[in-house]
Image (cartoon, rainbow, N blue to C red):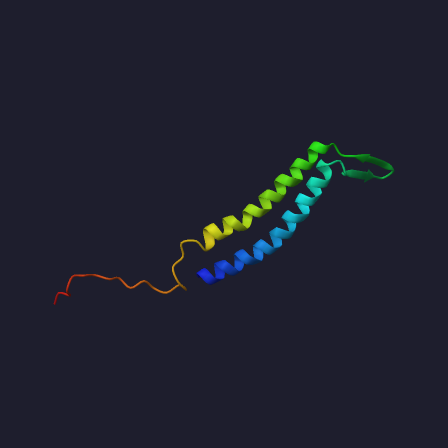
Length: 94
């Protein structure tokens, strides 16, 4: 895999997981400040504020996925997949 392909995969994953992270953090913060409610059939209730911490943690996890992809797919790659030419200082022997 070339550096360019790894970069494209990382950018696409960052966009997808960025949307997930944003919605998860917003939901977690809303629940944490007391806005979390649920409806199960006729039963309506509110979530305890501490459950919002899980949404915030999932949001942070979704941010770490593209960083990990970049770390493993892009960082440390040399060029566009070109073969390395060995360089020696010794004269050829015949």
